[in-house]
Length: 129
Image (cartoon, rainbow, N blue to C red; front, side, top):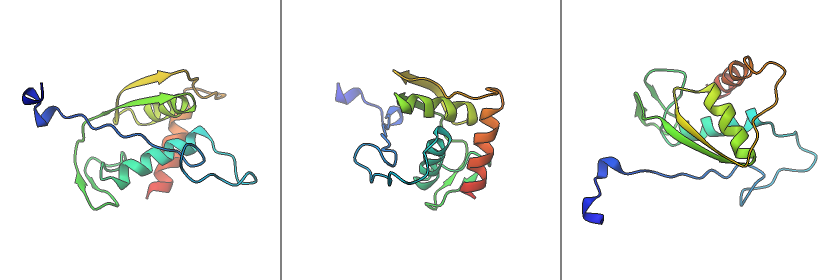
């Protein structure tokens, strides 16, 4: 019933279209390969662009000009390759992810699984600043 809807309980659903997939511009076949960590960066970049802030500071002003403090965590849903990206994102930025929903996907393969989130987090930090 619409009358029972509380604005505070509104859920926002956002579907990202990664470069080279869906309706986004496709990359040149001779371009660099896209790794799951690169796609995780696109999610971090998106969060910053829409004003959800940077995961690297308690309170920050995003490039969109929106000041954020402790934002609610998000539920990340990933299908196929997106499930792998969700795993990388959730492991690298647990302060952003309340939970993961993984559909028909596999996680990233790494030589040292415990070390992968630290490397992704550091790479995103270098690029987002």
